[in-house]
Length: 381
Image 1 (tube, rainbow, N blue to C red):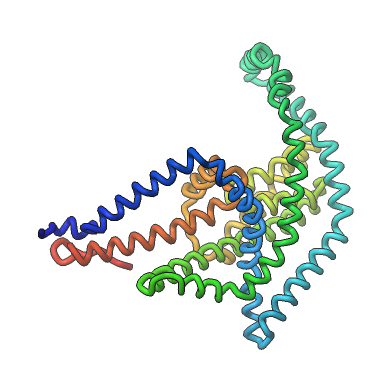
Image 2 (image 1 turned 30 degrees about the vertical axis):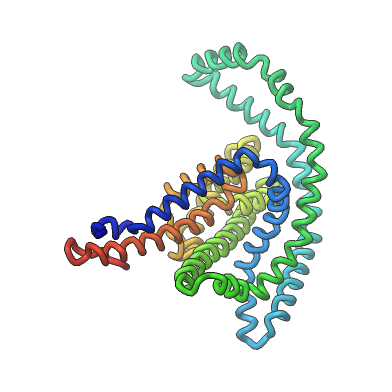
């Protein structure tokens, strides 16, 4: 039986085999949702081993270029890995020993005084609102708040009724952290030592017909994710250093603690800086309007330097993502997976983008083969 060109274009009989496969996958998912308790041990294992694996991959993308450089100057790869791991461990230990007392003191003091900062800021805003043109609306809002949320304390108490159960999970959480800290260096060592060999082993398991395509996909993923992770870590470190210097210049309290918070949260694009500046603004408002003005100048200067000099030179043009796309990805990933989704949302989007681009290129090539001569060909670049 002769089939039409359109049927051949969409796959012919292979399309029906694909639909049958999708139906079988759907049945499998339906069965899994009804007997998911069987897989609880597997999920527990995955939740235990995933954190150190993710940390090891992040460190792998940061350290692998250095290991390759040492290998090019005739230092054996294993010795290069050992030298780097020991050197970084020693450097981090030294920094922690030197900076830990100051950071610990600032964190304790900030944690103790932060509620006071919030109260003083709230009182200042309250006084300003009562003297401004918004005073009538403020009174209405206050009446609504007291009438509708007067029992807020009892509601919170009800929600905290299960807090004891949460406390019982602290031991398991500490155990997971300890396991991640212990296994992370081991996984990192073997990734640096045998990462390329593991990739080749996985490719050899595939049919020869698909090896080149999968190899190209993995290479593009490696470039995209590796460049993003390296760039974000470097940019976040630069932001933390610049803010620390700026905070010292303007005399802002808790300079090193606030700078570390900014560096850590800056790993998340767009949303991170907003979170980072919030505690600094609260402290500056309580301190004085002059300090708040100085903080605004410092923050504007750091954002200008980061946006015009640091990020363009560090991130380059490897992974160009529209800001609106980043915001949507962060919102969706955060809603689905929480904090982990916010942190890993952009790398996950980069991986998905590589796969979609590859499939679209295949679609264009297939369209050109069936319709290109009659209706014009796609540009396959």
